[in-house]
Each structure stands twice: as structure tokens, then as C-alpha cells.
Image 1 (cartoon, rainbow, N blue to C red):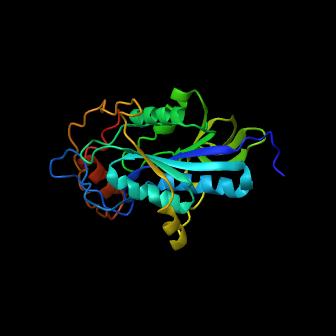
Image 2 (image 1 turned 90 degrees about the vertical axis):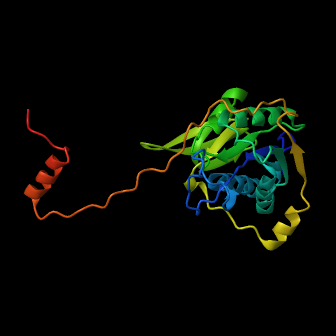
Image 3 (image 1 turned 45 degrees about the horizontal axis):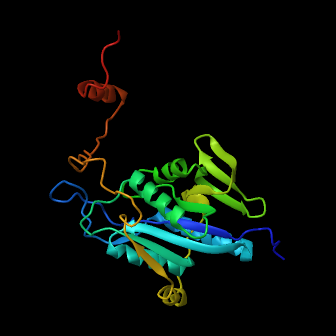
Length: 268
């Protein structure tokens, strides 16, 4: 039986609608960004975050009160929220921005999430989000949110164990030298790495149920947040095309080719 002193956990999962990972990225004709008239889907790292939140509830049974997903994006982002709801989230918040508006920067996203957390009736215990989005590869939102909130954080998580009685999370994270284990007190912000789990496919019954789950719509103005970009993109160009290599018959020919290319020179 669950002890009465243990408060039920509330988990928040920020997600992002991004260009599908299988799409070949192309620069738009204006060279102001990439061509967005392509297939979009949930950011893969955020899918992992949603999956982990659902798995935490499955492991802890009745210790999790709610899993709420939130996204900041144009009207089409509602489809991404429905996908997360079909995976197992209970409710969603859509901070809607105009279709023509630029994508919010990490600091703007972090400020919006902070305002949303402070607005919630029930306090948030755990925030789980992808370590980065595959469109901008910034990898900053989780860290910025932790700094703004003054909460503990664990980035690049490859294993998460939540202890609601002790109000701590034990996280294994990937670092250059191997693995690092952290013990973080609630409230905690966790960013997910690829090896944390493999997201499930939403079943047809769950997709149908997701249509009835509540989705709250807000604007940045209602949250008191200004999403005006602080950075200006001057120009976006594709990288130069790779030139094919060539074969050499022996080491002497290789050295001659390198010298001709200016890679090697005379000894000092």
C-alpha cells in the first residue's frame, strides 16, 4: 500500500514539432533557413522523454498523478501533442504561435516553460525533455530552464530511477569518459539521451482515446513571455559538395600528391 505521506508525482514533458528525421534537409530559395514544406514529426529525443515518463508511471504504479506534455509552436503542432497523448500522456498544453513566426529560441522556450510551471495548480516534480532538437541542435533548453528555476538537473540521461518516497531521482548519464551517476532531489530536470529507451508505437485504441484528452491552448502573451528572437540569421547555405577521392600506387606518389596539395612541406 502506498504510504499516505508520499505525494503523487506530477511529470511535465516539453516536446517539439520538427522536420522528420528521415527528410533530406534543403535550404530554402531565400537562403533564410531550411525548407519547411516537408514532413514533420515529434523530435526523436522528445519521443524518448515521453516514453520515459510513461515507463516511470508503469514502474511506480499509482505513485504518478499526471503526465502533461507541452509544446510551443504553430497550429499544426497540435498533431504532435496528440501523438504524445496517444503514447500515454494524460493532458497537454499548446502555447500557440503564428505559422509565420520564427521558431522560439532556447531561452524563450525556457522562460515560457518557467511561466507555465509557475502557473500550474499542482507543482511539478519532474521535467523530462530531449537533450536537443534535431533541427537546431542547440541542446540548451533543459539547462536554461534549470538555471531559471534553480532546480537540480541531469543531462544526457541513459538511465532514470525515480524514488517518490525519498523524493530523489538517480540518473546515469553519458559523459566523454564513460558513465556518471547522479542523485538529484526533486524538483529535477532531466534531458534524455538516445540509449535511455526505445519509444513505443501508439496503438489505434490509444490514438482514438487521445482525441478525448484535454488540450489547453495558451499564448506567450498570456504567460507574460516575449518570444521575439534575440539572434538574427544572416544567411543559410548548404555545405560545399564533397570532391571524390583518388587512388595512388605507392607511398612516393601519395607524398607527391600531398605536397602538390600543400598539405606537406619541406622540413625545417
